[in-house]
Length: 416
Image (spheres, rainbow, N blue to C red):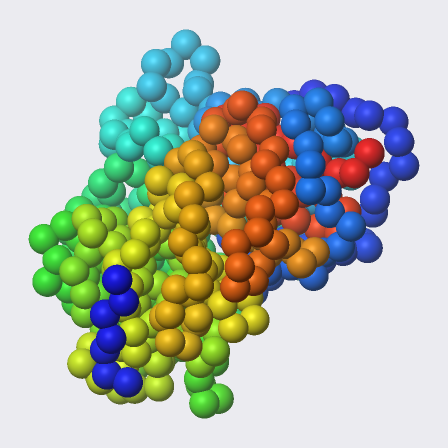
């Protein structure tokens, strides 16, 4: 219903490679713009664990960070158990050749001992997605620390001074805003948002999240948007979404709602900001982000409770907004009005966020099935691709290829 509001060793197959230089890099969670879009072309629409697989690389340890890459390097993180020490891990970064699947280097960044906090079955000690910029790689392990390394795997700086009490582990990924690296720290109490100078890892600013939520933990990745020439940092958390000045952390506006454990990254299109309120009963909010102060009663344009995701992020394409609920229901909205064009069950449970590339929507279920849809106001399923490997990671894409991380492996998928 829509509620109206105020107006290690890889398996190589020897055929000609598609060069990454022909397509766009994928350097952060949900790609270059942070909203799941790519201008990649010539992508496969059908595959399985043996068909259209360029290479397969086993990944030691465990983690649900999504792959990021440019023409030189593909990066993943993992929590690799230390030998002979139960429940102790090396929080590790892998540098991989994206063309061949060969591992270039392995860098343990932090040691995690047996006092590590408990994690949810849908989380891990290496869930946040890394970030690439030029010759630098930023890797985030939530409350356990953040670090910068170079493309040869050498650590340039570490910061473990931002300790907070997590609940179910960490999940939100960092973003870049000018000379700053920004991320949310929404733990079990005293949640905050922080910016580090990207060159040194030192704190530039830190602001407390003002919320009346009883459960303050959330796992969201912020988003930068531009409104009337001003850059805004959009940072959802429990019971509130904050818009901040990314240079100073100063508040611009906020909208209140009821919800915690917020995961989906916001989407901005058609002059509206779209986000989910999280658990227990998620609400989709469409917000006009041009206000000041508390704009809960003045800037929420429309809301919906129809099959709203708690975990997967949204997609906005042309004039439509697409959502994929955790229990496998896809919905297409008119982005400006909230009118529902279609609402269809696609089967499976979902945590990964969808992508839009080569004119199609790709969304992967927790059991490895990727559904490919044709966007539009009528529901059109192109194909389903069964993989039968558990995954919570989101697909990364370049021209001619998809990169998919599963529980134990990383795959490069192409037309072969």
